[in-house]
Image (cartoon, rainbow, N blue to C red):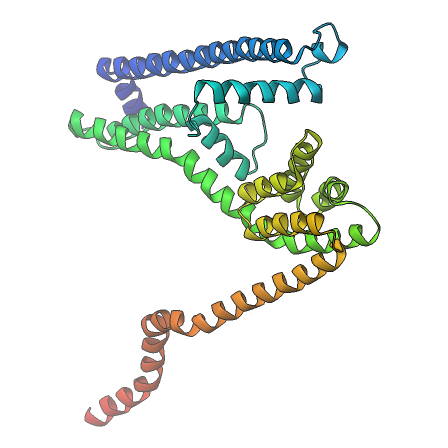
Length: 329
């Protein structure tokens, strides 16, 4: 086996193809890394120029201490305001870029790292090239008499599968994370009621609960902490909770955002509103569970007819068949 593998690897065509694919992968990878570094540097310069324009229009001195600290909330606030005004002046479209969509999908899957998009693209490229080369060599090893076209088609097919595997993994992880957040959201509402009865405001409640609920639901706690950071950076409570509902894909979070906004505008008791909403949410979940339970008999018809009914039929008719056969003989 090792002798045949060494012969297939020592084939000049195989070696040249593997070298060409490795060179292509390396060239594409370093090109992407260089393009990412270039775009990041250009964005830094652009943000700096936008900030300088915003300071000039606001008549703020750049000699202040907060101006040199890029993590300052005032720095980020002026930067975002200036960038928004610049986009409006240029008539920028509201369409979202592909990188932002991918970043949001990775956030929904629970990947909060700053380089998660880069690692995701690297994994796709690596699996595409690795699976393609591995499939080409394995197909040539197990089927040495196969034509070169079929071998290349097999390598390309496995390369496409390797390219699609990271996206499938992200989708599966999203479903698991969304289910975890959906299961933990009623507990989040109950803890909000406790904090409201203790006298905490909604903004302080979210920041407090982001630490408490992370012990049992870490992903939900991380998303709540992001919402707390948005509120601390200047976003409204309604906007932060609406963004939370978009990230965790739980409709009850958007309803909670509207409920808290109306509570603040009307000046009603937040505790009573949350208690009523908690009861309604649990009743709604009970209704959904009853709907699934009522649909269960219809879903069981096909597996019962295919797997259970033939077994019961054999168990009932087998003694009669044996008696008839013994009587005839």
